[in-house]
Length: 179
Image (tube, rainbow, N blue to C red; front, side, top):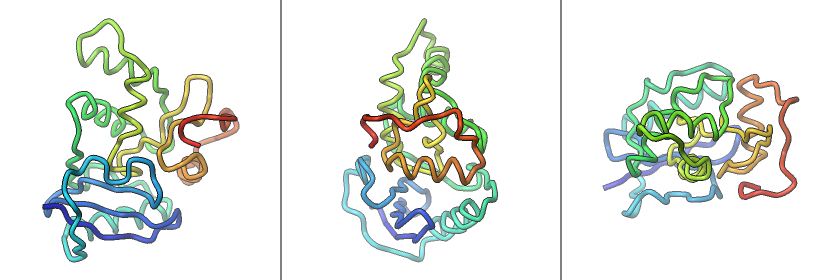
């Protein structure tokens, strides 16, 4: 059984999902793939300790602090490949970015392969079920494009600005999947 609660953040309404012990989802209102990794209906329940911990974590994050991902019990649901990509996302330092190509190279090493598709990585990043905490907003295109955020480019920009990323070297694509 999966439970849910909501959190009103400076970036909008967030839905949190959990299994009673772990956080399994965090989606912004209107986010692409909202709840997509869960096969069951969510039962609203506000008084679960993991939700209280996640809300405190988010309070600190939106206050400009740098809470550690490891402070929360996370259990994102996905294939072994997606899990591997999400582990790499968790290694991106606060206030820094990485490219899809960089992640593809890291995944190739992890999987003992000569190369890995950046598009496959992009799919895994886009389906990250625990947005913000697993920082998929820190992934950019190799050309400097801010494409590829299921919560929308404007939210991606807000989160990167909150973290102090110098956005002068990046651009918003004229068209793309995450607009």
